[in-house]
Image (tube, rainbow, N blue to C red):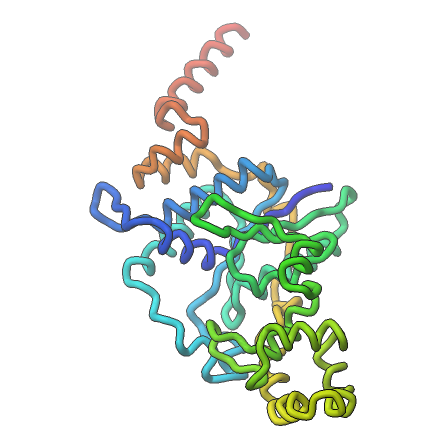
Length: 314
């Protein structure tokens, strides 16, 4: 079984930025998010030893969700001016390291991760593939299934939990596939969209456990009315809001991208390119984790000497 790691670039960058103090490089530029991102990136390589790795990012262009609901994410604070340039730095380092990146106008990184996870699992690798999503965004738990797990940081950048179907059920009381309908009922304050007014997590979980899906809940509205007229009234009043919330919460599985899994092979990871960038930023501790004890220039000089010695032997 091969292993694919899908990293939610924006989620990890934001987490790193807020988890670490404002570290600066020799030029006085704040690079804490860059450092934190690659600290986690290396930890994933060390712990998971993947065969393939991909990073997905959001883009600035409005997404289709904004077109569905103008208030979508409207209350999120503006991105810090200290974080904005660090996104570009991370892109540049990933490019130098030859790490595959996906980002598409109109779609969130979540949608690209969802689409790639489906294409990877349905692909034609003889060995089969297991997908691990790395993100702090619990919305992505809806993608968890027998072949897809999620690695979520719980404190700082290094303490992580791996969610499979059983652990999602244990934590939330519902299956991963039911999380979209759960959010359709309770809404999402962070993304600024309502669900059904007056329905909280406990009631939502109870309804989903009994009726299994949002559609089935509304099919059984009369039955619910006989048990709890007030709850039925809430559901009927906000049926449209629940339908909209369901669409906003659903991760897209058919974004306009095509995965060529071989291009994301870890064998293409350019460590020298990454080393040069870490040296440029002064990330000494990250260089140590790459098991590098000499600058790239010295390594290349030694390699040339070895090549010359081999030529003499020939």
